[in-house]
Amino acid sequence: MEKTLINFADGKSESYPSIDFTDQYERLKTLLKVQKWIIRKDMHKAMSPLSAISGYLELMKIVLQNDADTEIIERYRTKIDEGINKLGDIIENLHEVFKEDSEIEELGSDKSIVDLEIYYLAN
Image (cartoon, rainbow, N blue to C red; front, side, top):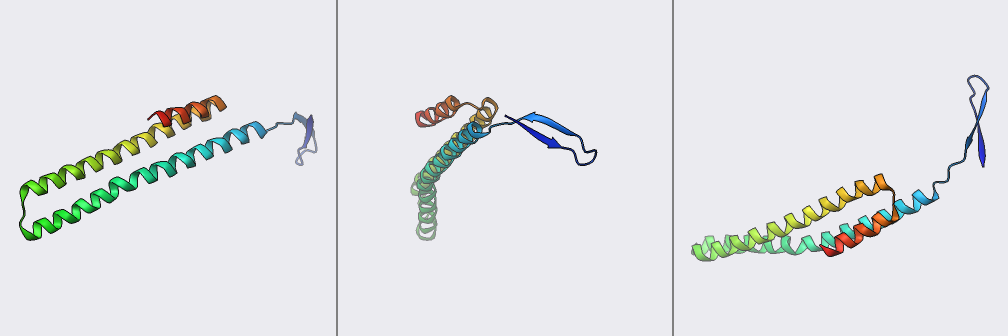
C-alpha cells in the first residue's frame, strides 16, 4: 500500500511505500521483557553478596573495637573479597548481555533474542 506525502512548501506530492513496523515492535517488546527479566534476576543475585559484605564489615568493626584478632579479621576480609568478586561476576554478566543486546539490535532477529536467553541461563 502506498501513501502520499504532500510538501506544503511547494505543493508537490510524492508517493512512498507504507512501512509496517509491527515485526520490529514485537521484537523490541520481547527484547525489553528479556532485559527486565535479566535485570530482576541479577538484582536479586546481587543482594546476597551485598548483605554479606555489609554483615562482615559490621563484624570487623565489632572485632576491632574489642580485641582486634587478626585471624578473625582476615577471615572476614576474605569473605568480603569473595562477595566483591561475586558482584563483579554479576556486573560482567550484565555487561555481556547488553553487549549481546547491541548485536541483537543490529541483527534484528528473534533467534538472537532466544540465543541471548540461552546464553544468560547457561552462565
